Amino acid sequence: MRFRGLRSLCVILALLMPGAALSTAAEPRPGDGRNQLVVSPQGPTDGGDFGPHTPGTKTSGIQEALNHAKVNRRDVYIVGGGFPAAFEGGVAYRLDETLHVPWMQQFRLDGGEYQVHYTPLEGDAVVIDSQMNCRLKFGLIVNAKSDGAVVRIGPTSKGPDGFCCCVASTFEFNGMVGAGDVWGKSSDQQSTGLILDSSAGGISGNKIFVNEINGCRRGIYVMQGCGNNTIEAQWIHLTNLAFQVGDAHGPNASGNRIIAGISGDIPKTTGLQVFGHHNTLIVDVFSADPGRGLVFEAPAHGNLVMSSNLAGGVSNHAQKPTNRIITASSLGRDVQTPPPPASGTDVVNCHPFPVEVRILKLGKVSQWIETDPEGKAQAFEGPLTAGQTFTLNPGDRVRFTCQEAPVWHWKGLF
Image (cartoon, rainbow, N blue to C red; front, side, top):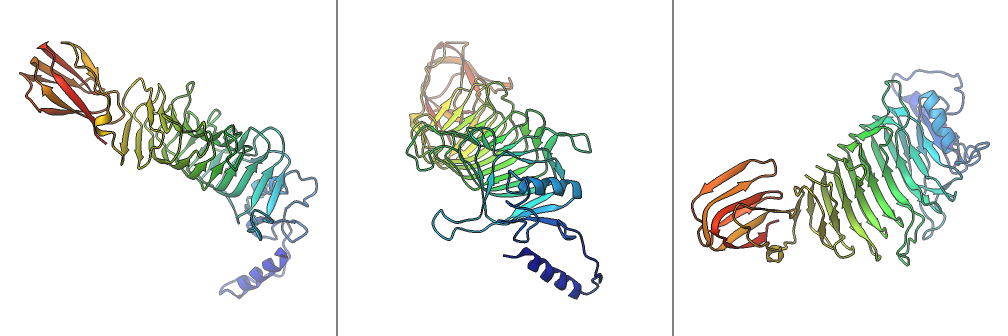
């Protein structure tokens, strides 16, 4: 493909448009006066502005294109092309060092479907610095040998407004492949697919979409300082831990909307591990180890999980029991019923879902009190009745004043 011919056609069409300005002055390369730089499979020898034949490049010309675009206020387009045979012959760009997307504002990176292969034995394949109101679209990124990240979105630079952040931007990836086994023959994978690294600057108000993550030890890791992002991963598979929200030392990853389809497909897999709070998760987990479909760790609270499939089940270690699960599969009467409390003692609903409490035997109760997680209490004077029911939401507690404790049964509500 000769990209200069395509440019000439565009110029001719532009001149034929009504009101078009006529000019015979030649514009200097790269860009030929366009607002978009082209990275092409054999650029610049095939007519693209940059590519693998860019002098001195270690990134197939992509880094040079990004640097030029920043200085000259251009967008960038990376040419793609599909496989002529199964897993063979598609357009691929080699990275012999980490590709850094510099601080940008009002910038667009676009392109076809291509592969990027990161070859070093360590480090991250692609690192994205601060972005503001940008749109970045990548193809398939492969971290072939390193245990680092396939992609790290990690703002470290301050822009003209003095902020270090990724904000109000859109990121799209056709796929991320780690250095693990992509055929499912090993249970010990390598690499992290996507890290939202807010250790040096906030990441908020962004939309992030990944079509597939494969062959990683950890699929997506959302750090503390990430909030109000929409993060969607269509398929995370052959990965030991698909999605991690926060961690023990930085649990305050909050306010994110997470949508994910997860299938471990190998032993030693966890669907979601949640340390953060007040996130909304719409997830389907199709395979995971027992008790590892969804794990609420000790700091997790106020998260809402909606799911039609939670293979592996739930482990709930939350110290503040205010996480909530809504699922199409009910535990119903399989919910563990605690023993009735002694007079003046609270029993808390520590489950991440409401429970229906049904009174089977009355006991001798003169008063009972329900208290919500914020400490707001409602007292009821008088005895219980046979068959009476009441609902305890996650974190609610109940206390009886009684000479003889009642007998009850708990049923999960989803």
